Amino acid sequence: MRLQGKVALITGTGSGIGRATALRFAAEGAQIVAVDIADSNEGTVAEVQRAGGEAIAVHADVSDDADVAAAFGRAEDVYGGLDVAFNNAGIMLDDDTDAIATGEETIDRTFGVNIKGVLYGCRHAVEAMRRHGGGSIINTASFVASVGAATPQIAYTASKGAVLALTRELAVVHARENIRVNALSPGPLQTEMLMSFLDTPEKKQRRLVHVPMGRFGEADEMASAALFLASDDSSYMTGANLQVDGGLTAAYVTPE
Image (cartoon, rainbow, N blue to C red):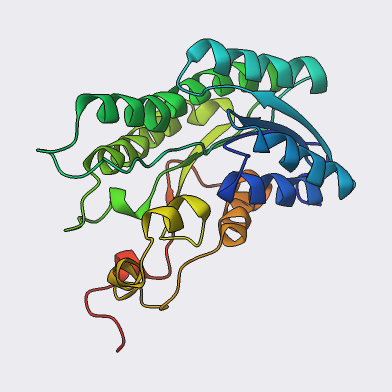
């Protein structure tokens, strides 16, 4: 019960990391504000409630500042404050390739969700946490923010690099307000979003050959990492990038 009595707002709870984290945080005692644009978000909230947890669903597009403001307002209205904000929602578009071929619409949409959505979430989390005496903000970045790839997704990669820079800056600005800001950088995961992109055995193996542990990660493993960053277990940690990637960013040559 490491989050007993805490209020946690999580974006992207309709699937993947967000869904797994909502379930994990609720099991640890948190009251969950589950935010997503997808109808599947209602299913996540129902799962939390069936397991005995407390959660509400908020429909919001994180690339719209007014939607994000309303979601955070809902958290305060229903639960009286905010302790944890996990800015996790993100997209990875099929036509996001290299700098030559990737169109402006794809760039704008990717940046709108992946970086503006995180910035808006941080903005409103800071305001709420100031009123509540502090808290923990977690931003989902990615291992691609730290390494280059010859299978480029240029807008996605650039947006995740921006998340790391934003996280460091906010961590320093708000360090003496009892507001911690850290990033979580997952490696390649066995989630619907990535598996729909890696839709052949060859594409999967092209990635796995670079992962020392030799497998894709699981959303539940990211939820455990997010729990660490949300809880007092990481109380002297801010401005950090927690890389949970099976050793990928540490590797030069992997085991055969």
